Structures are given as C-alpha cells and as structure tokens.
Length: 241
Image 1 (cartoon, rainbow, N blue to C red):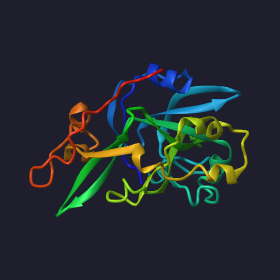
Image 2 (tube, one colour):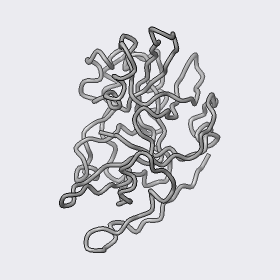
Image 3 (cartoon, helix red, strand yellow):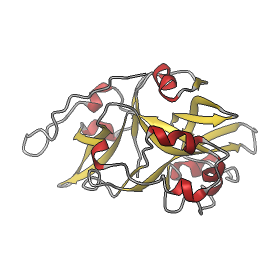
C-alpha cells in the first residue's frame, strides 16, 4: 500500500525530467501528500507529454459520487486488468505519478514508527499510475483522478510493509504512457518490485502521521531504537537534466 508521499520537486525540474509540457500551477514543495489531494501526474496525448494535476483516489466514470475515490488510492498489480474499477484505465489511461519519497509505518511496541523511502540515486520516483475522468451528475464538473499501482514488496521494503508502489525505470516510461499499447501481457510484466538496491529508508518524525502537518522538518532523519540512529544519511536531491 502507498497512503502518503512527498512531491517536493519544482515543476520546471519535473518537466525537464519527463520531457513534458507543464499544464498546472506549481504548488511548491509538499512533504505530506494525502489521499484526495491534487497530485502531479504525467500523461500522454497525441504524442505529447503533459504535467498536470489529478485528484488522488481514482473515481471511475460510472461512480455515483466522489466518495469512492478515497478507497481507490492504490490498484493492485495482480488484479488491475480485471477489476471493473481499474481495467479500463489500465487498458488506455495510464500515467506517471512523480514522487520524491513515500512513507510506510512499522510497529514499535504500541506505536507505529514512520519511515521515509527514497531512491538511492536522488532522482524522483516514477510511480506507475492509472487515471480516470468522472463527471458530476449534478454540476457536470469534470474531475480527473488517479491511483498508484502497487506490487509485492522487495527485500528492502518487506520489514516495513508487504506492498510497495510500482517504480518504473526511465526505459519503461514511454511504453507505460503509450495509450495505443493494449498488449496487457507486456504491461503486466512491468508491474514488479524494483531491485533491492534502488531504494533506501530511514525513520522520520511521527508528525507525518497527521495530514495537517507539512514542511521539511517532517523528513529529517530521526534516531530510533535505544537512541541509535536508524539512518545517518544526508538526502541527495541533486537533479541532472
């Protein structure tokens, strides 16, 4: 599962990273993105890539109201091609959801300790995503929404959670975004855990548990386990265009 993440890169950087045209106002760095928030997505249309915003929590076109989206933040790779809520989007409406980090929680006694998970190379993560378009039956307002595809955990993630987002490497982005690609067997082969050394994790403040909290203090490394630092890494967020 992925229920919280950080989207901290400037949109001009993301546009260069994904060779996309920006179609949304940059909200600035967000360290604690939660379900139903607007999130950055990269979509492809008629050979062009666009960086825009979609509501996190997929709302199928047949939904009666928006509330279903709060339960549709993740789409399991094992059933993404068969569940009615996701199969149409999987076939023709795939996207990339850029993220700097995501969070998972590990039980420590009676409490849950949050951990931030990032790429070891400092680049943004490219979550495999799905998107949908829904129209409010009363107002006719169009709502674009998305979900993150998840898969089984790799060895690095397993102590924290049994699921993780599908993180696409650069050579897979074009195929994933191509709406004309309907070979579901080829797409399903992409929905696997990343290599164990692609990511690293470190403990962060429990303040991230509250979606009302935001800011860089949430991602400072936290000492855990009898005062010993779980990680003493210095985050590397260098960008190479």
